[in-house]
Image 1 (cartoon, rainbow, N blue to C red):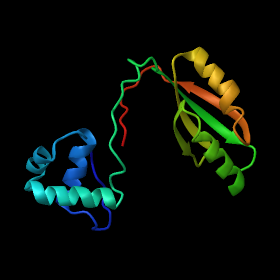
Image 2 (image 1 turned 180 degrees about the vertical axis):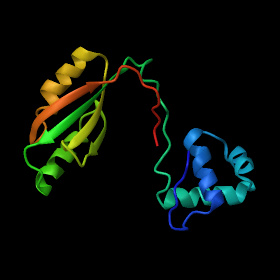
Image 3 (image 1 turned 120 degrees about the vertical axis):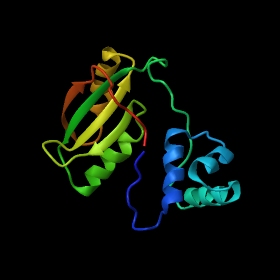
Length: 156
């Protein structure tokens, strides 16, 4: 992973640690230290600091959605009837509670939000769209794009 410039707060070793962990989060500290050119103790100190400062938000398993029966991906464009701050906050809070919505992005353009929705199949997506997404606060309309194949998809 390419780590951006963060105003000199991260040096080359910090960026190397983040890059290594982004592709292999379960790497032992001893191996991480070797890969980034540090001894174990300084690597541990840096790793602890990166966690404390919020550069690393946590560690989790990278699950295979297909093996879990969740390989249907659709992107829903959502337009709101009200875009004042209270309406946006209500929509954002409601979206965070919907497990099928994998990601939600506020968009500058012809619609307000782009949702990535993961379900078992098109029937389940149709249910989520009709019963859940359409019922979210201030939803005026939506438009769906179904993914036929995932070419690249990685968590940041």
